[in-house]
Image 1: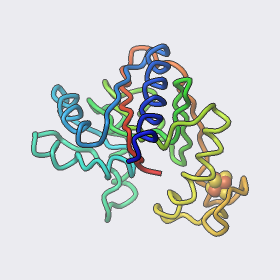
Image 2 (image 1 turned 90 degrees about the vertical axis):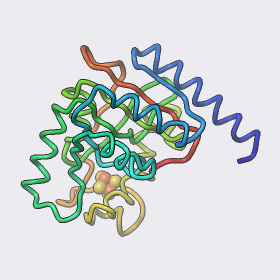
Image 3 (image 1 turned 180 degrees about the vertical axis):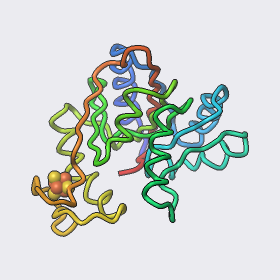
Image 4 (image 1 turned 180 degrees about the horizontal axis):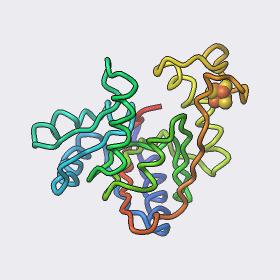
Length: 213
Ligand code: SF4
């Protein structure tokens, strides 16, 4: 990567990490996914059960195999071939797992985590339930404020995610949000986590790489 680009991204990550800490979160900055992986293994050390929020970032990090080899019981609802009752049962189990791994759709430089869900399992587990939550955030997800976050989610995140999950709202046909009223709409629950929720522990891992959508 170009040195000045890398420097600017690092600066953004460090400033956002400082804002997250002011908001009560734990925040750590990593140069790349290779540097992140040992931290994730260590974070899972005292966990028996590890829940995975549906996340392209997590798939790109490729940590599931290592955690399984370390003896962790993985709760992954996105496995192909699951019946919908099985999928929902796993989503419910994720709400009480020891460690929940996910990403966030957007992160503001003021340290706010902004997400839009269709079912609510991911944002539910981020906000309450698991003893520890680790969120992995590529530098591409950092935005200026909540308005930019919501715009990013509807313009950049939702169309490919809806396509990936097999839904067909208007944005999967036109590429842009129509603020639809379609039964296929995936934008149903919007959350802004502004401060670390009471009695929970959210660790945000900021990575100087583009990860996920
Ligand atoms: S509101 Fe509808 S059209 Fe807009 S991003 Fe969400 S699903 Fe797509």
